[in-house]
Image (tube, rainbow, N blue to C red):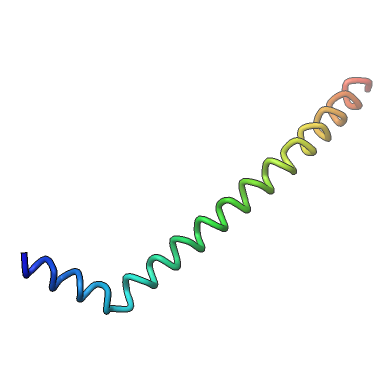
Length: 59
């Protein structure tokens, strides 16, 4: 038990644990932003492709 506690304390004192957590949070924020942008622009692009397809069917 003492060995596990020492390993945990070493992890909390090292810079690797907090840095990895910060990168994980940053990656999550970027992913959420990209998904939100894709959903907003996805509807617009779908409508644009429909208009182009309809226009090309005329010719």
